[in-house]
Image (cartoon, rainbow, N blue to C red; front, side):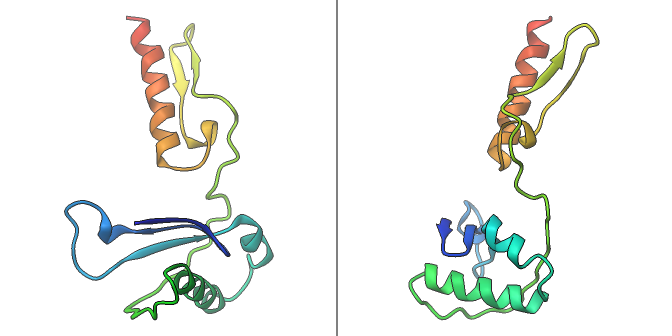
Length: 124
């Protein structure tokens, strides 16, 4: 299950909803960029409490039975995107790829890698 843009939540993913996984729900919650900038130096407990409340609200006010929490500040977690798919220099035979070229997320990283692979394959 994936939640996108709800209150202060930019993205929330329930990893136990993925195929082949079971057990108690395990959520990863990422705050909106503006909220994060405003609270970048806030106490981890404050951030956790705010995100727990936002997640409960996003899930319809369901009380959360939480076993464990952790907070990590990824100051540069969401890339801005360089509006390129991959960088390739055929003369040098070198290239780079990554989500930072296309936009945030694993899918952007995968696409960038695919674009680079296509350029490399076209040489042979």
